[in-house]
Image 1: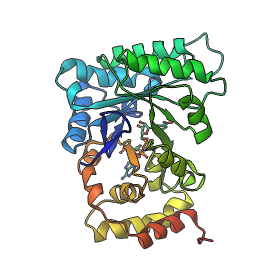
Image 2 (image 1 turned 180 degrees about the vertical axis):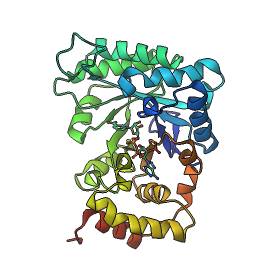
Image 3 (image 1 turned 120 degrees about the vertical axis):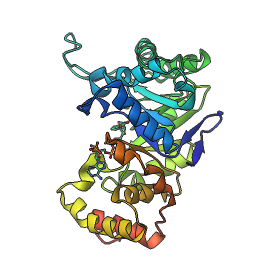
Length: 300
Ligand SMILES: NC(=O)c1ccc[n+]([C@@H]2O[C@H](COP(=O)([O-])OP(=O)(O)OC[C@H]3O[C@@H](n4cnc5c(N)ncnc54)[C@H](OP(=O)(O)O)[C@@H]3O)[C@@H](O)[C@H]2O)c1
């Protein structure tokens, strides 16, 4: 598995990342099943795992952490990313009237402590601010991220769903470099290619992580764009003796920004073989064939 070095820090991520947003959706939530997914990912060379405090209504980190608690040798084989700032108003927080964002130092610190406890670890490899917070006080948030890095609680910091003006404001108040921006990118969600995000990410030396790289499974659903593109994916998969999901990942991998897809399947069988996506060749004409089929429009 290829690895991507992050800027200004001795830390690399596996090119494919396993995201655990859906971990608590699996009817089998036994430690054995969680461990089976971790082992399947590690066997593919996927060592980076993407979390957030809120996933599974605050349950996913705990579920995953049980496997780490059971086998202390696991932690050193992986990189753990987590995120915070979204505050859910679920039954777990009856006092919250609405869902809101919180990038205050107090909230970041308490969320990191919770993630560390849940994951049975004493450090995160990267902490991302999950969504841009309109009330972010960049000086306070930047200082809090720097202090968490200095204290060794997180090795690095990054952002998610940010555009360049938002992360540059935060970066301007930090000593350490922001190293990641995680945004939605897939064959069915092409915005980042056109709105400047991927250009800005490359200019500023961030690693672009792509969430929902199969459009959350919609690529296999009924919507028109998915139906237009699927025969093409099926043909390419057959030609390369592969699978449609792997062709969809290869389409992202072919972009020169070095996109890191964050894969979300709960199916151990689908985790197996993921690394073969890196061997699939998508030439320029094929890349645009997929683009045009999905968008439904000829290029201007
Ligand atoms: N930063 C953010 O704001 C943000 C937002 C959303 C997600 N994320 C991150 O991104 C990760 C991935 O997101 P995602 O789960 O939406 O990714 P995804 O890989 O686009 O979608 C996964 C879904 O697709 C289905 N699927 C996969 N292969 C399939 C196939 N061949 N046929 C039919 N269905 C298939 C999976 O079902 P099975 O489980 O049955 O395979 C699963 O429900 C998350 O875990 C999280 O870490 C971040």
